[in-house]
Image 1 (cartoon, rainbow, N blue to C red):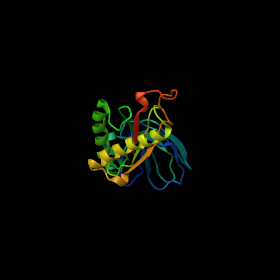
Image 2: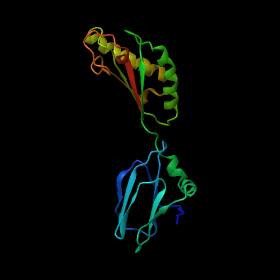
Image 3: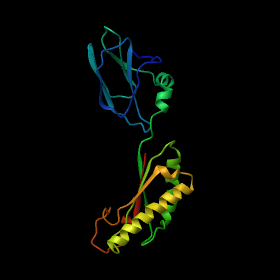
Length: 203
C-alpha cells in the first residue's frame, strides 16, 4: 500500500522532533515526513480522535478522513516532491559556522585562511538574506586592552572583506572578545595560533 499526495494537503518537513498534529481531523488530512536539505530526519507524532501514528522514516505518511481511522504507509518520493515542490524549496538553509586564523599580532589571514575565505563567501552568497555574526579573538600574548582592540580589528577586517565582495553591511554584526574565550586554554603570554581567530556564524 502507498499514498499519492494531493495538492492542498499538509506537508510536515524534517527537523520537527515530537511535533504533534492534535486538531480535530478535517476531511482528508495528509501528513508526510520529508528529509531536510542535508538528508537529516526528525520524527512527527500525529494524533487525532481516531488514533495516532509516529512517522520516523523518510516519506512515511499518514492519512485520515473525517470519521475514519489513521492509515500509515509510504508515499511515493517523486509524487511528494512534485506536489509540494514550493514548500520543499522554501526550506531555510541550515546555520553554518567557520573559523579564520590570523598571523600573530595582526589582522592578516594565515595562508590557509585566505583560501578558506573564498569558501565562506560562497556559502554566504547562496543565501538570499543571510545574517552573519563575526566574532574576533586573540591569544594571550600582550595586554588585555590591546587584545580587545586587536580582536575587534580582526572581526572588522572580515566584515570589510565581505562588504567588498557585495555582502550588505547591515547583514553583518561584529564583536571582539579579546583573549577571554580561547579554544585552547593557556597561561598568560602564550602564543597559540588556534586562539588567533575569527568565528563566523551564518544563518
